[in-house]
Length: 114
Length: 111
Image (cartoon, rainbow over all chains, first blue to last red; front, side):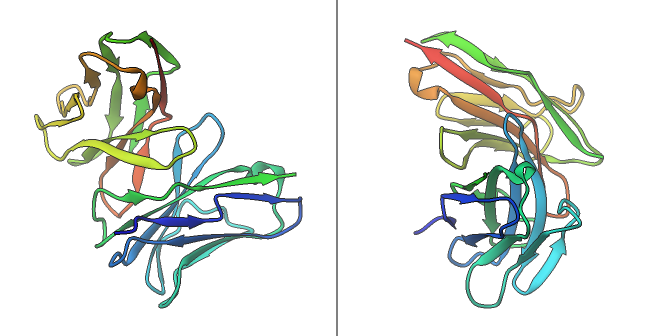
């Protein structure tokens, strides 16, 4: 059984470009969570999605960041006009039901901004 | 709001030493508590969990007891190995779906 798959593992962007991070949840899981890990810090919640719905986006920056989880295909975290401060590891987790614990984590996408 | 506080690292131990990583939390209600481990370049793996007061979670020689009276969930292991070197995160789940993490404690075990 495949776990949570994230790609790319590493992503390099120049300031002002767009970054797209993909997450395929565990098969059968319809709930996806995105977390950000800044250097030397713990993980901070960003957004919680169910298929075609955003359930909680209280941790998402108000500008430049968006997330979706379409009916078909992976969940996408999109960062527009990236800045140096966006450099971080972005982790995706999934669960089979709302609030289901524990959440299963992917290996993350490490985003570097030049 | 809910929060988790862990002891700061890095923690450096010799092989076979006793490990304690302190974790305390602030939360309303009755959260579930977790320890996750992150090896270099990898994602988080669930190490153990406890869902109610006085529960003890255990896995791979690690243990943690949910202490509601002291709002703590300290991680312990009697004899660490070099392969235990990693970053350990304490986390809580209360409601709504999201996990709340502590800042992580880096453990380095020397042979």
